[in-house]
Length: 257
Image 1 (tube, rainbow, N blue to C red):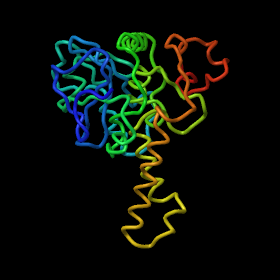
Image 2 (cartoon, rainbow, N blue to C red):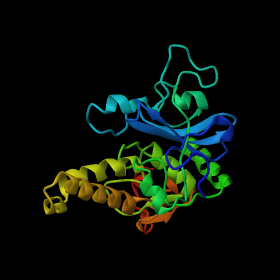
Image 3 (cartoon, one colour):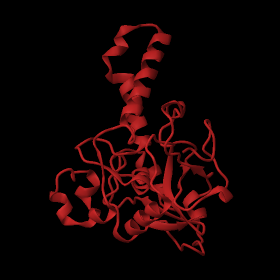
């Protein structure tokens, strides 16, 4: 069920937060968003990257995406300390997680109409959330044991939060993880340059309509709540070597665990 925010905005106030919520905040304007799981007491567990040992785009964008880790203001946070070089799954206070940004709630179990109305990916999914106690268990377990190697397209902060909420992992060898942000980026590129349907019309309105249709369809079929190449994986299996040899256990996270 969709709670908080509205069709046009997922923004919420701090007093609306509930333990187990998947929250996010936009970075560098609206260039991208950083995601985490709220565990109560103004604390957030989230998955971050660092320049030393995580996979990025290999482009100038990496200098901005590194800021998914809480930035140092010169004075360490009295609750978190200096987390400016933190990486992996970490625990931060809500202020450090937001890094001066607004607070947004990621929506689960939305209708197809609501999903498509949210033109920007990384704000909602058709998949249903598990109970809060399951979400908290996964997040706290991964805080102690890690979530593999950060990859902007296959295993990022949004992928981490979605796994904590749903327990779903992709078991096929695909180029994308569960992240709606990554899916939107690829869907936009596909709509512009990759489809033969763009040759069906030469008018600008026609091209725009075709491009919009391809973009929406690509986002929809890639959503974790629609795609069929996913399986429910207990969080304890993510650190079990035996899990790597079992059928249906070839997700990127399991490979890196």
